[in-house]
Image (cartoon, rainbow, N blue to C red; front, side, top):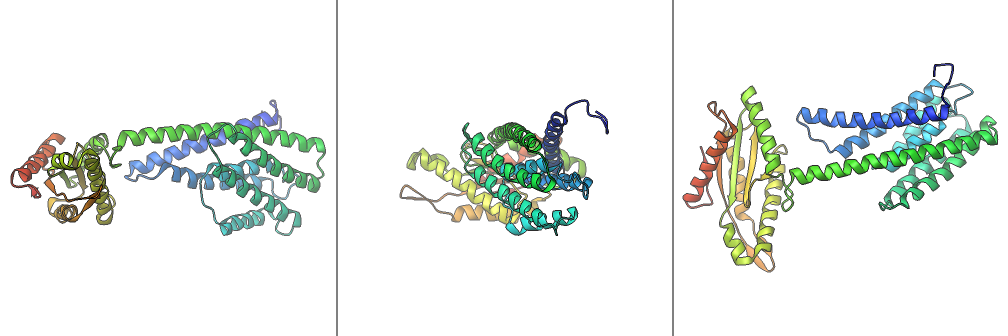
Length: 376
């Protein structure tokens, strides 16, 4: 295929072009997520996909339409516009306000020079209807084979209305319109199968990632996540001389809670203690994370904190737990924690050095009466 000669049917080439558009979108979103993570940000991948997908489609639509502006073939990218609207409304779970929709349409019509054409406003109305109908269809998705028909039927009906209007304005033959309808049917079907499979795979990967990195009971980071983060932060602090403080804590007399109130009560105390500390960390410094690294043992990495800077936060956490009252099955359960804290030193050659020191401080807190904080 050259600029002036097609050696492959344009419809087939267009299908591969749009498949490439989707593949490039998926590739770029994954690269953006990894790049943000590299710089210390941990965005929700779905949010990145949604926001970038919207901007991506807007840029492509505006770019393509601008290339045929004021020409007799200004309708040639109509199927791609249908494709983009369906993609954004059905596959990107975004709450787009009506004024944002109207604003985008006005900008598009202004660039296209069609604000003064009454029929163009009818086009716009059909596109808006397509957007909200497909968005409604998405909310009815049940992960069942019938989802495809709930996707394809309304999109084809509104596409047919749109092509009838385009045919009327540009004097297209019935044969032209039928070919375009066949093409949009193939296009939307391909998009549904391809994007749905990608998103199903992404959801499965996200679930596996969550299972790998988060504790099922408390829903905080688990030992595997701690090991990876600790390794990364230890290496970073050693390289940059940035302070790093490690806090370990155990729930005091946790076995007694299990023996007295039962294991369900013990699980309740574990999960609610984790929620309590996680909430407080969010209030103190949202960059801090809680890890469950053992049965009743938890860990916090204070990246960028000296022990002097971390001490007020550590004591605040211990006090919050001490003052909490957990109600389970008619019983009021109060607990406390024993804490060991230490800071990375210049002679700590390995992660185990700082960890053993924090663990020794935790042991000291237990041996000297529990409900204590030992910082060395």
